[in-house]
Image (cartoon, rainbow, N blue to C red; front, side):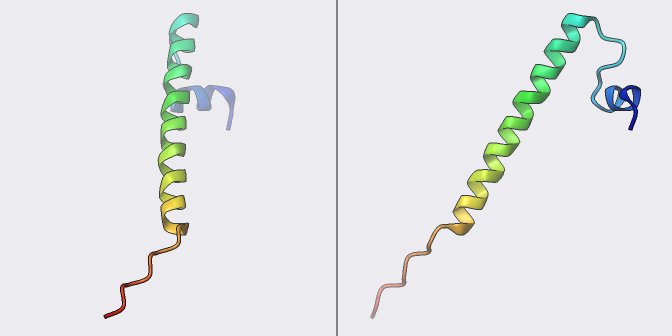
Length: 55
């Protein structure tokens, strides 16, 4: 994928340098949030389940 194609996919074309920095920061925040959610879901799936109480 070329630099131009990548920029277009990320919505970076036609932006001023400051707008570009802001957009990249926004994308990085979104990525960090998605990563944290995925990591929490994985940890929840891996957590040992409590044993059912004996009757």
